[in-house]
Length: 422
Ligand code: C6P
Image (spheres, rainbow, N blue to C red):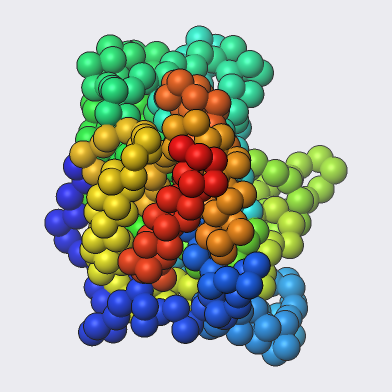
């Protein structure tokens, strides 16, 4: 288990007492009926809903500040640049990075991982070097590695899982060898909810001379993240899964590694000087931010982080843990329902199936009740195949989910059993 011993200020709650119920009024979309019913939104791993302050921040940016960043000397450009860079320092504090130079804005977790895959491998890997991933990865943490392996003659190794859906440590230690250069692992599985002990993985990796990239897409919305304590080399996550806008992601990387890595894309803003004979690159973090970034959404992401900081990530984790326990108990009581995986620490997501009902049919019946879940392979086909099924249903929790949402889900599942005569 990852233990957080020192709690950065950002992780403490400044709101003395909040409950998921008390937050719902802050999310306009939760007030609208869906198919004439109250909306029970349980697809937060796919994307979260946005609080009013994030929506207002977007509007405010376009109404008051809109200009390009890092380029103009005029007033609006200065305002836009300042707001853009304030988000960077807010992210830095949120994950307790040493420096804002270690925070790169991308389009999302996917782009953050692709950046490391291409840039790190160019600088630090030779033919026949190895990358380790695990069997529970999202496609975003599989396919970029397959692509660089094919291109650069590298080898991909995969850590198998125990029947509980946790990493098989013996196998992991066997795979870790002198040729291992990088381990890329999810902090939290988007299907099983397994929380991986990334601090321990980083210790083992570093002892073997390898680096670690953590796919934090499903952890950053739910748990306090302290990159210095985890001692990971890279950490990737997406704003839209953290109550922020779509189209913004973060790559954290240790400064000395980012310094040594070549740019991922070329263009404006990532250069120091350009001539036809020789181009030199900008300093960190701009070296990795070619072209006009997604300014408005980066600016509005700060509002989402401020919101989470006010709630306190420790408190977010505590509240969600309670609802996770309630959900598991409620689902276990439904006849014919199989929950996949049994990790010691499950966070965010529960994948399940109901005997004799295809998950897509189940999702459709629930949708008629205003209950939004995800069904399918969840962009983790190797994992779902390992579960021995073509697809699963999945509920995934967020800060505004309540016991009433879970009760509605349970009622919906009973209704589905009746409808399909199970
Ligand atoms: N998982 C889900 O429903 P992007 O799309 O770049 O914001 O995030 C990709 C990603 C990477 N890693 C993990 C562990 C993820 O869960 C995701 C996104 C969503 O599970 C959409 S497929």
